[in-house]
Image (cartoon, rainbow, N blue to C red; front, side, top):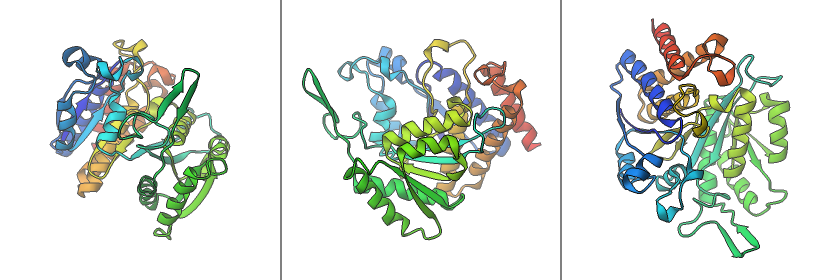
Length: 356
């Protein structure tokens, strides 16, 4: 399996190195033949090539079996015409990565929740209000004059149907419940179209229950009754906000894995930002990117019917859970004392113990 690693900015190179170490460990143990290549994006490629996302990187992604994308500092990039492209948004558009899949599971003494959380948010990834990716030319945001700014929300039947299908297929392997989150009481046309397509897809999954919930209520119930949710499917902005909320409620944004998946390409990406204020200090928590890489292995394994890759993903997830369960082997951001390298070695040791 060929894996392209794009370290990114800030803490990206550190947590990407940790992730590769974990993958190499499980790969050797299970004879997976994982092969890695690294290419610069972000400020590193901007300095060397004049762009934060070189064309050679874009061309390479569909040739490999999976990509690991480190966090990027895109808010600090120069304008697009000066080479400042947001790799995250651009790659989602380039490869039609329409499903952003973000699981959240509460952990003992890390979560503030009174009830357990074990859910997956499936977020539509290419449309909605996201102005950098919802138009084929121009952007979805514009200013008719200096004192007026407008944004266009793009919702299509195709986009809604395919992300709904991804959610129902996922739910079929879990607790068989999908909650469609919307604001159709206000955005009657756009969310009305989204719900129409979700309902049509639901008709093809009679073994999966469909629930519909307004986004305001969902935000509240994630706190009060997180155990009512299994798989949530929603539009781009709602999914972005709710998945961050769920991750933080379940323990920390730094513990949340994430993949961006299309029909043939999948990119693992940490759910958090680049944290340039702690870059280079060996204190970053690599959990999110490690778990995202495990999700990538599982996605590829299921797609290719490769049981070993799925097994490797499960081993990594169990090892991370073992390490996080012990306060002595946590990183500082979640109450522990370990740095990036020491935490990585703790996960490596847990993998060895799991497979012993």
